[in-house]
Image 1 (cartoon, rainbow, N blue to C red):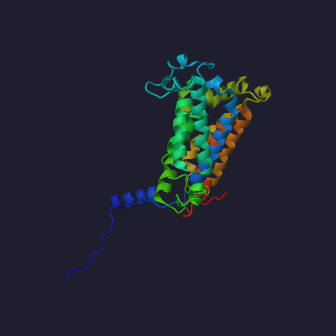
Image 2 (cartoon, rainbow, N blue to C red):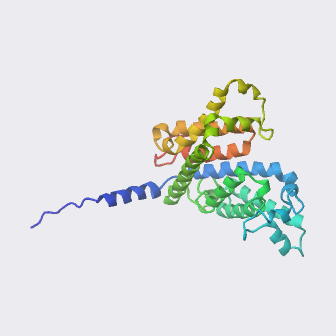
Image 3 (cartoon, one colour):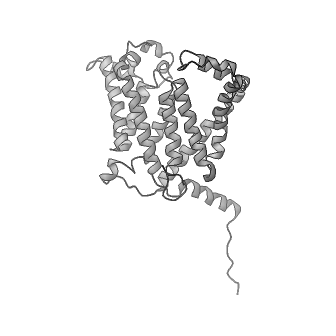
Length: 311
């Protein structure tokens, strides 16, 4: 008697379906593989640069000794001193330090070639935690972001593309919901990082950033000064533009990186910003690391067409 009535989805159902589509629609693991390779290469470069001075930075009689670091570390965080004490009957403190450092290099190497990728990521994250993160006097932004990235790497399907795991049949390069979730987590995280950085700079020391004073003091510091930029004192507007440019990129990142029409421009502007910081301030590893994050997550094409810029 009654005609069939087509059930229309409620607004709440449409929102929920859109969210699930946004977060779990199968995506290619290719961008995550690019992230894995780029991050591993940057961190291995850093490890190579530190290798010959590793004990001077992290050893028991380093520039900042373990007894002093104890007062700067988070309670309960595993540290080299613990393991040196546990293995004191088998190895010296220096050998324990070297062993953890070699484990870190080994984990990164496994990630780079995609051989038992998840185990490599776990090894790299744990050894990075013990060696780097318990010596707060010897680390800076590149190490903090590396630790966050390595934590994500333990859970994401980074070995499902361009890897020995795929060649061995242990992983599939097919699009998957797990790859989509991993990409979304990284994309949202980067947006939060850049936007919160811009807000903190503007509100925390707003007048100094907006007037260019902080930029001027930074490029004049011997620690960061790579070129003679004293001539810029004659052109204060140039210093201000050098400050406003990065601030603008950080503010706009979270809004212009999502639309396909502006994604490429925003991504390349961000990479150019980090390249400029690397050249002018000498923060090459930090610049390379941040450039890898944006390039891999936003510029490498997914099979489903959700990103349309191919490198």
